Image (cartoon, rainbow, N blue to C red; front, side):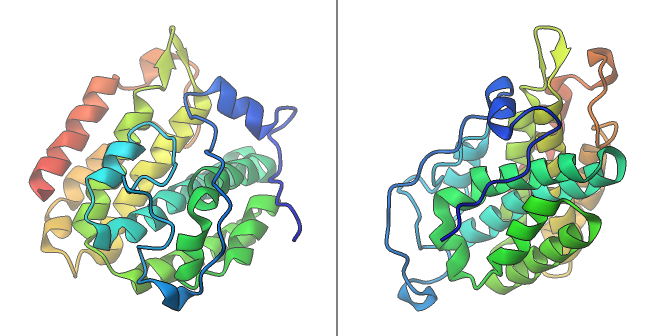
Length: 255
């Protein structure tokens, strides 16, 4: 099998970016034999006892632990989708290489540690790998369409997924400004998570009255990020407490 190697940021490897940012390196999954999709119900394959599955982003452990098992695979898909959503935004302003790096880091941090879980859903992995290699608009669109297809297939509670994604977004945002400087990678990862929460509400509002009711608050949550690229001036980003408070408001209402 060919080893997947996502594109690099301009002059900087993804590994270097991960070291520079608050995101931890993706955990190296223990070797496991891949089970066919019928071996376990969707959402059980490859799950750890904590439900977090080795994903090392800020806020992710709490998010996965707080989501019912029946909605955990849906949260994983939404989590991965956030990387592709911010990649799609970044592609328009920063180009293909930047977009490929963002999508590739999503594959490394979210997909690879629990690949068997994703594969058990019937997801077309090749579409995601292509987007993470190329980073062009067409491949990113195809990858997001595939994630939408599988997200609809696996079911789960949209309100639980939104709660999880706002937790991840606010957790990541807590690392955006450190030592008086803005971390552009953490900024984009946190915005991607917020965008995925917003899309979850838009896609499944009809199936979840709670998600529909909170759409305005979720839109306000996303608006706290000024745009797809981090401002260089920390004063142009909202305080972490403001983001956290808005996330808590959404989570409380959805609970």
